[in-house]
Length: 382
Image (cartoon, rainbow, N blue to C red; front, side):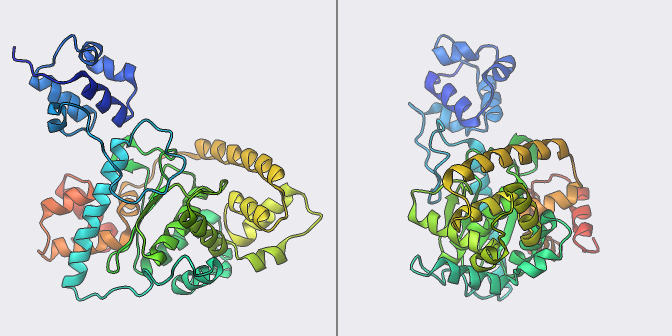
């Protein structure tokens, strides 16, 4: 039986990169401990299976040492720094979105579309409140429109739809492609923006809470208005050590909850619990956003904010766990790739400009019947 020579460190690198449980991986590969210790070498077939299981390129296992992989876009995260290395899931999501963006840009140029004027229209010298007003005007994103939504989850859907109508592809997914076995970790990243005048794109980690997703979208839109590609954690609770992230957080907070209107809506003698419920309903945002604005305007000091924030975050996570469940596959797929992107791709494929093979790859599907049903969901007579 022919065996291949692999440096032990590469087995460890692949396992850590894939964020896989060591015990579960050992159950699939009984000799893993021996491979990692350099006591035994795998066969080529075993190595191929291991590479597939860890989502690592096969060729990397023939390197003399683990490769130094860098984030392919500017990295403004703070919370991901303590992790051992970049995950394969994050890298694959970024590369997938870059592929989709490149395809969409080419298709848009063929269709005669011109650059969107808002991408790169502001700088860090532009006051956050002014930038928020520009975004609000472009999207038609008003407190009144959100107040008419039955829930703030519906307000998030409206927000996404308005961003897409303005020309931004908004992709929301908690997994890699449609692989429900590859869950994205909100502790590694919350979202990213790929700035482009023709094909601006925002990706939101759908494994995060709905509360965080709304803030992430607002934060990443601020990056697009700067004309800046960025990977973010967009935390509501903390102040980033990046000046750009701090500025984007301020824009996001002002966009979701305008300072003047929020201050006018506060009632000084109201308890925190009552204020959270009332103001979250009034502005159709999550209670976490409301708490952040209470800190921003000085209604809460930092100690009171932290106590309330942690308690509210725990409550929301528990509620999300109870309400977790499946959804319609086709509508979920559209949300994962953005309605704007999906409609353009399906139309291009049906008209013969894009190969079905390429469309399947970018959508993360494998069967013509699935593609046809997706087209019908989008209103195409396939």
